[in-house]
Image 1: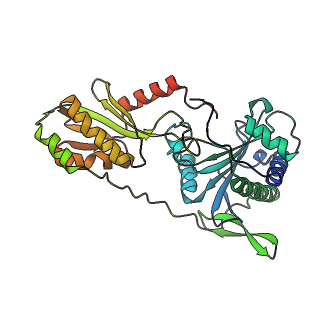
Image 2: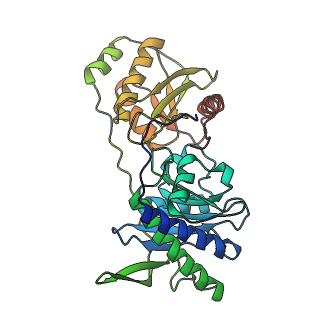
Length: 351
């Protein structure tokens, strides 16, 4: 839902804005998407920290033009899953797991006020269609927002190193073919006094991230109370926890709250929708599930879930109350309800 945000826009110093805009202009003039693909991944180490950005050039398909810097192991994993078509960038839920900095080129009339302010502050002149810089920072669970000074500085380095890699690829189309399958070319800084020299070497990709899911802090007395009610057992419910299709601005930067969605499998009737008000969404949604059992005077025979986050929330209730938890790739009722919510709220408009 597009709303005027109450969140503060990060302030970028003039020198940082000038460097970033200059790098964007040089990158656009080079137009490396003419000979590079989004599968041509390479890595750049942040000279202002130790994080690694996994970079790919977009534009070969003629749809969007620019550079994406996937941050860290989780960012790399996202890119690999999209590339393998395990995930799709059109999936409204998956976009909330994205950790990257995007530098795209837009038409001037499509820029937001902060985009235009950055260009004006830099003093760099941009001309033409699909030639004006638009920078966005994506973080898991948050809405896309404008880059901080530190993120802008890292992006500037990534753009400069992307230019170096692209020029190398133009001379030698096979230069990103690794000596061992799966390896990536890493560009990294080496400091000599105040000077930075960029070197390169081949590295193994980061190991897959292992998410540790904390179980809910269950209220055993409430579970026992519901158990003593002797509720009727029937039917199959679908349950999912996912990011709500709304953007809230009551924090430091815009975010999408976690939401629980319960749907009757047979009828498609939405039993409950709950926005989480705390960071401990697993406990909050567990409590909401117990409350729904009480209000509906019914416990389902089976609850279908799609992923581990949802499973962890309800499985210990299942052990105590005697229903089954079954994983299912398809939750048609949940998907229909979510699509309806997203259409109503016009989710997905640019900030």
